[in-house]
Length: 346
Image 1 (cartoon, one colour):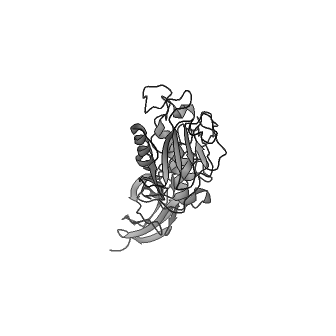
Image 2 (cartoon, rainbow, N blue to C red):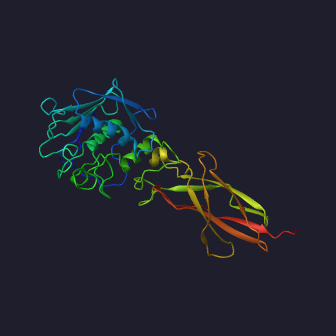
Image 3 (cartoon, rainbow, N blue to C red):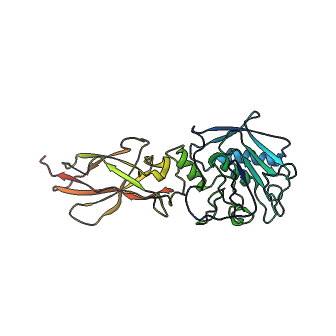
């Protein structure tokens, strides 16, 4: 369970909560480092038991990098690192006079950060890594991810218990998402709204990869789907003799919208697009008549296709592109374009 704490340089895990209902990038997130992939080398301080070393290295390694298709900060272990992973008792460290703390973070938005895990858990708290069978235990790996998220992305420490569909961000820690056996208790990676936050403020690492599935409540997005998409065609009409081809190019991308941050106007790379077709003289469409795939271009058109028909008489055909939508990005249709194939003499 978590509560928002008004400490500009401190992140901590407590045992009370204030829920926030949404399906948006993790609340309180902003860009804290000018560089993409900001390196955050870290070290251990003091005596760290093996089980906790495993938790730290896993959380700040594969746990941080998994489900994180963004250019956000990257943690790397180094014996001379500026960041410090710690394990202390409440008697030797009071987490800035905060009773009931479990995990604590300091120097949010800096490279010389600290993360503390409490060696004498708060009353009623058991660590799952030490007692995997304990009902109500808490996963230390999730606690570390929670503090790391706060350090890398927040000026203060905003807890975010998004409740639309459950376990959406490591910055939430309601009992139903943090304690065994409730959903999310064994979270060991960033979650979808954490990834969405880093994508919005740092951009995508791989434009061919996934968009976070937590973008549909941003201003201008399609609720239940994701960011709106657009199609820009090279032309909406053309003609040729039957049997000859008419090339059409277009660009499909995320709509331009300032609320989308660095996801605004990102071209959709290597995505499958369906083509619907009908006779211009009728109203009945043939859905998924053909398909194409976009390329990786981020400027200019990102697909070109030659359309060929060979009717017995001059015939006009209508076409439209249908992007079916994917994680984090909404479905859309292109404008209709009409191509006329003329019955030319041999």
